[in-house]
Image (cartoon, rainbow, N blue to C red; front, side, top):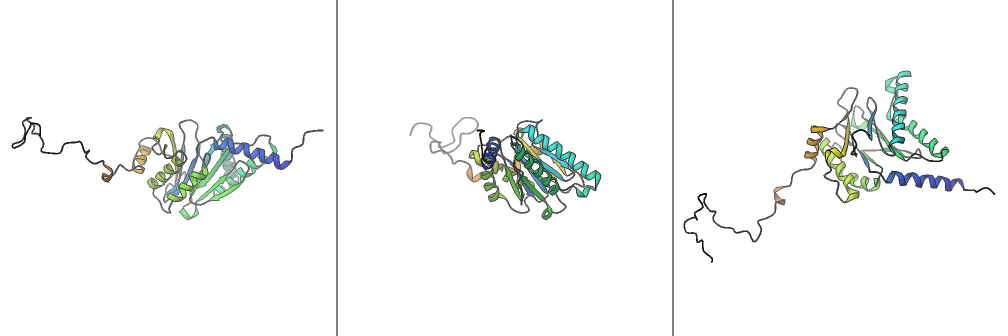
Length: 266
């Protein structure tokens, strides 16, 4: 008799396979701030981007297998361009692109023998913060609308918990970056809190720009933001004078002891 596997077991096996593949990677963070939407992802590569532009005010972030989400990104750019050309540029929205991605991933998950090991976010910066849109699409085509922040890949649950503690409405760009770095460091007990700029991929959707709001933060600008988001050690934390350090009148510059000071043993 042919080997039989129930549809429920097949779907479960596919889902477990995809989740394990996504969890092996590092998490990515998308967080809303007063001037737009911030994207942060650990990425030592300068060529293989996890964060990219999709359309004028829409950006894309992904984790998982690079070749799979890169194909999705290219297809999303084509879909957005064709839609804007056939209809109107205002008809290209994050909601429409997220729904299109959900259809593609859902079809791949049910019909293909191997699901895509990806998790993506589509975000749009509107003219006002209240109209910003952030959508998270999982490997099986499920779509979730996020408010304020979102985390994907790796230990996303732990990252989201820390983000919830640090997030506040109307944050500045520096505060948003500080919250993102703290969240990304949570699964490693803070070991990545001081990750260098060369190991980070950071981009924003800046709502103050007229059309193409997407821009990457690199070089001196990113270094400046990282320095501001990691405040210097306060004076209260400076260690006290050690007990074995002698405290007394200082020796003058000529090397002779001050008057009235004994140089012999006491």
